[in-house]
Length: 92
Image (cartoon, rainbow, N blue to C red):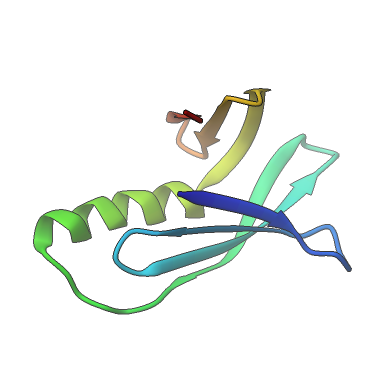
């Protein structure tokens, strides 16, 4: 599960998910470049099985390198990273 919420007092969005650890990252949108900027990415520090920790590293790298977020519909969200990789999230 991924959760994105907007800070009520600023233009910062908070991106949150959990694999083994809770992963948080702040997002701000640059209107001049039309790109998202990530900052303050962090996670808790619990260990787990190596295969799950590898998945968590992939998720953390995705979240900390968000450049574009494209909402195609209520059911589909596409994230593009700073390296040009795209990940699609579908709601079922």
